[in-house]
Amino acid sequence: MSQDIRTPETRSERRESGSRARARKPRRTGRIVLLVLLVLVLAAGGGLYWTYSSLDSNIKGVDIDKALGDNRPQKLPTSGQNILVLGSDSRAGASGELAGGKVSGARSDTALVVHIPEGRTKAVAVSIPRDTLVTRPECTRENGGTAPGAQRVMFNSVYAQYGPACVVKTVEEMSGVRLDHYLEIDFAGFKDLVDTIGGVTVDVKEPIKDGASGLDLQAGPQKLDGTQSLAFVRTRHGVGDGSDLGRIGLQQQFLMALLSEVKKQDLLGSPTKAYKIAGSATKALTTDSELASLKSLSEFAQSMNGVDPQNMETIMLPVAYDKKDPNRVVAAEPNASALWKAIREDAEIPASAKKSPATGG
Image (cartoon, rainbow, N blue to C red; front, side):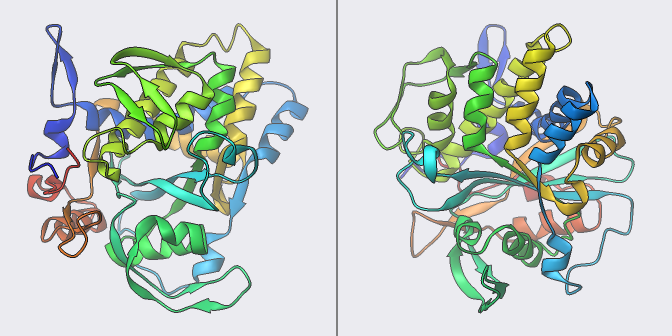
């Protein structure tokens, strides 16, 4: 296992004088979380009522508040907002036939706690690695029964076994942060979106060959179709040390490339393509019940219009390799606690809270 102990900031990359320097990529990904939401709304905002109604009905809602009740952390003492964004990967049905899809059930391969401070002029997104060992609280099963809490469970197993409400509860208990909204994007749903826009170009830093996901890419710019894109966000064995930490970077890169490609499309000049893109996007979307409509999403997006992309930042939850199982990670202290404390108090996040001993390099 690599002993390269570098922070997520120093492992990120930027173009500078024709070479790749390492500094700015985490900030770009914070922009994705918010602008993807804006793109979904803006792409679907116009048109006749029947068009609006059709797209509106695509969005699925989950009543998180009803499921969790009142035993939750206090809301922020300011007008700030906290949103849990999950990138889920359901591999049932047609999705299961794609490369890397021979896995039962649905999984949450990407998790971001997006914190928008009071004033809504900046934002920070905290990425929680799926392989993080956490304490899962008592949760309600789909059949109405109760599952007792458990220790040292892998974070992404919570979604697979007990669904989004339990994930929200787990994140709230591990962080003490009250989550105001829930937004889930199905990666498999992006396949149709990518094909609709004609593919997404990503700059592959090093060759990737992963038999598990079916991905085989040479270094350099590569235009990926929907199936290749899904394999790209699923792959882990072909990057870094084979852990989830390396995959996080690829998923962030893909989302950024996808957003850039959508922004290039002449949506106003092609209403038909606009509708297809919006249809694919909304079909991939699940939110909490409060946001489960185009109108609510639009109002929420408009409330974030003041967010300056230059003031956005994405960091990874500070984690360390687990001493009992090096294939898993645990929250690194005191860094993680300092990070969550800053978010709870709507305060500036100290530099020490952004450093992660484990990087997956």
